[in-house]
Image (tube, rainbow, N blue to C red; front, side, top):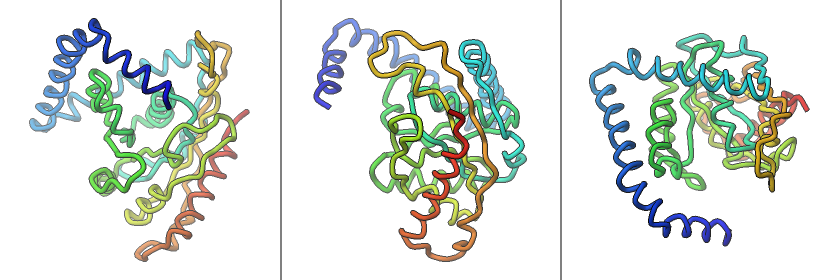
Length: 260
């Protein structure tokens, strides 16, 4: 933790970085954010934002296919347009969101609204970019009512909501962290299935201590069949233990989908 703080402080104290952030990055980010708000207010998200989203899907698909021979299995398990679901995935690396989004969107053409940590929305350019590709912020480590309600709204509209049950990066491979219960709570309240996704390999792209990416990594995403174990709690108040049991089942299913 001390190392992260020191590094962050060093960047903030760099006069060149401070100048670029204030006079270049932040103005561009603000302009892109403002453009997105204008598109939303004009009711043109399907005509403007969605095509951009698909262009990014194609871009990252080509990059991941070219350098890592990325393969996606189980796309037939993604519900058709208009059917909502909570999509859960393991979290191994900083590359996961791009691979995760491509896994869901590339064949189905569906939008995945990924719940992403609030810190990313405080970073110029990254903020506007991830907003344009339908991500929305959440405060980790606390019950974020605003993020939860936003997710419920997406599900009520028949959309897909992407979540990382572990809440942060795990140790890679099968070293999963204890899952949070938010995804189960959300799926129960919305009355929707949970779709498990297993990402294999992203933790090996830039392993700890590496200075350059490892291009010998084989990346795969395997999408599992919808889980409805929590259906028994629809219309009821599930206990924390019951929701924890659901999430343990989900994470075990995700482990089964890994292809190491």
